[in-house]
Length: 408
Image (cartoon, rainbow, N blue to C red; front, side, top):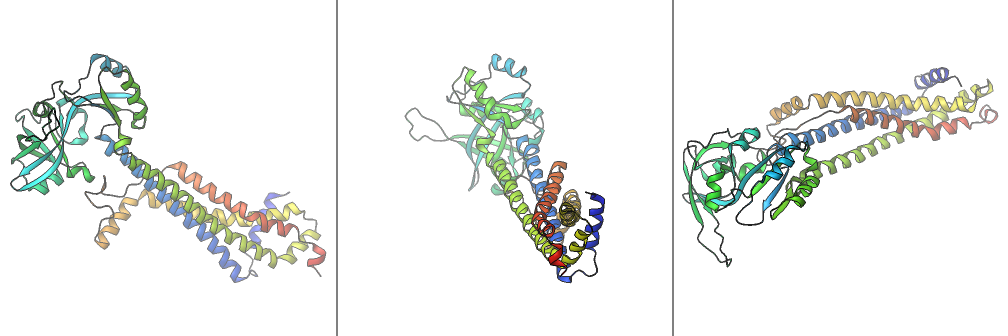
């Protein structure tokens, strides 16, 4: 079979001036539908990739990847055996011992719940995402850095004093007066999203003393090279740890964000692939009508010696050309939109005067995009493949035409 000759005939049939205007419209709509599906699919996959990337670079830059939580009110300490094991483990970047407590901040008649984290200079030095400089508590051990939302809720400014109320534990589990600590606001931190409404950073020794944590810390955090290995690693270390602790990882506290991203990615891919399939049905319709219209030409080709495979190839190529045009244009526009998504969203926000992602709700306040070549390639070839599959029935109908009946 001469493939190049079949390609020439397919193009002639597509560009025929005798072709019905309705067939041309159906053919063009199928090309547009395939292009639109590819465009939207590549753009939305890039957005989902962007959210996943920002989850790694933003949220996972300050929340613990995996951690031990003290089971005893005396706290937990980082022993030498665990330090040596972690130092030799390429999966572990660093270990931190810190103290965490929930309490109430009071400024006059205003009160706000807060989750305080007591840290040391090593923690601050290796966690730049928190935006608290190392040595920040050297001059004032009772200083605190509070989230933007906490500051706004309590009406505080840098340098103000605020009262911290911590729950007091008793042996018989009865109520006791809360412990009171006066803190000085040293600065404002903004981590993004809901964290700004409850986060507070202070010196570890100050918080541990206020809670009467005798072993120095309540948590041991593992900073990992791959945060997604946190669940397996924390159990491996926990089984060999010589103190009573609870084991936790980020998938238990914030894993719903990653799961939501993966769910949306799957739904988007399935939905838009079905949109492309619907567009391919238009190819079936246009080819069936084209076969009906070109019956006499097909019969003439057969009387000249054209085999069934050659006739079938003509209509497969004709439908595939529509798919290639649509997939190419849609993929090109999708790549452009994904690359310049920030500029596009900024323009839309400026024109209509609203933000697509509001501050204080999501962990980022812009629409991210991370274009990946594999997404473009898979989308393109899936679209072309579906177009080829859609041509099988009309092409078979064309190959089965009997010249004697068609030329009567």
